[in-house]
Image (cartoon, rainbow, N blue to C red; front, side, top):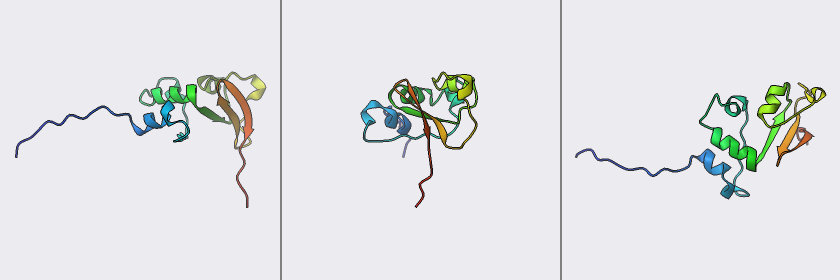
Amino acid sequence: MGASVVNFAEAPTLLEEAASPAARGHKALILCGDATPVLNGQRRSPLKVTNEIKTSGGILLLAPTSPHIARDHGLRLEPDQFFPAPAGRGYLITDALAVLRALRPVTS
């Protein structure tokens, strides 16, 4: 049996597919972690997806502590709006509108 060449069609990754406008209302994409390396160009592979999320989705920026972090996420804050605590407090950013939110654990 000889070797053969197989052509693979380009297909979006699961991450790209979930972030696409066609997936709105059908799929949710939740990314957790420090997005700063992606947003400032240090990690380019998920940059396209991250920009799609910023323009058509929403960002929950928890406990912003510096102007640099807020600016990378598209948020302009006054000096008194930065806070390291309490845990679960942050800004929900959608359609260039930022709203301060506090996330609380569900208790039964």
